Image: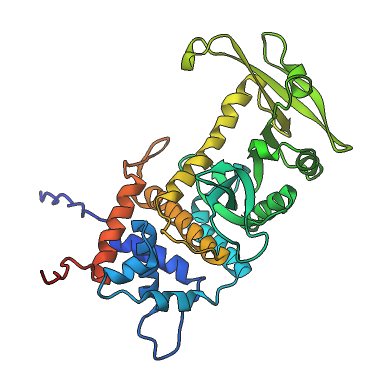
Length: 381
């Protein structure tokens, strides 16, 4: 009886060049970097240059100076100067959803919306490009971006970005981001919003649109207002009416009582109040459920690891760089889920592959492609 030879399982490897190509292909599907027929550099080469600046967190000009095969700074800026804000915003949001949407369930999901600020110094290109906020890093003016982030197992993607100008309404920001999610065929199970959205207009808008939400209530003043609900030793639910400027909003409020028990050197009871609508979350679980929103802040920290250094005051270029940084984070999550996670009964086991490691791997490939300079010329002594 002949014995069958055991099959030798071929080892498959995902090369960094494949990840780079995946990223470049997504961008070039939407971003037109074509030039005339006599152009020296292809759109792919230009994109390699820009991504190298993002990943190394340096400037476009430094990439030109220290890479022999890189385009000049002027070439890059000439290709980018024709971009328009609305078009870039639309293309960035298409990029963010391009591949990842295939890995997201079509069941109603949890989403978080928050604002991300980038410090601004100097004079605005257009009046209203920036928004004022609390002083930070020596300035009170910031480029502001609102993002919507899906909370779904290990697939926590940023699905859309909105550049927020001065005096834009919060309800318009929410409406824009929810429209982006709806365009991808996704439905909202619960929307987690930051304290800044705790306003009469936002709460009335969400209730009128029948959008389930959880928003932390803001304590204003030393007495009265929401503080009147902070009584007793047990968590409970009640109805509260918030008034502001002649307008009012009535909503269900979950008052959660937490006992510190010496944690963080605190003792005694602490009260947390949340405006809640359209959810069946038990009152005592509201605090832990809302904490899932904090992943969106982690996405901002990861995004900052892939932002180029630039002094540009052009909101179009700023939005483009922010969008590319978020795209790199999405690619990192997508690659882990589709190619690297191990399938097991009951789900997948993610692999330990930090975002910084992926960036370092891609940068090494880019340095080879762009001809990174190893030797420096000596000056005469």
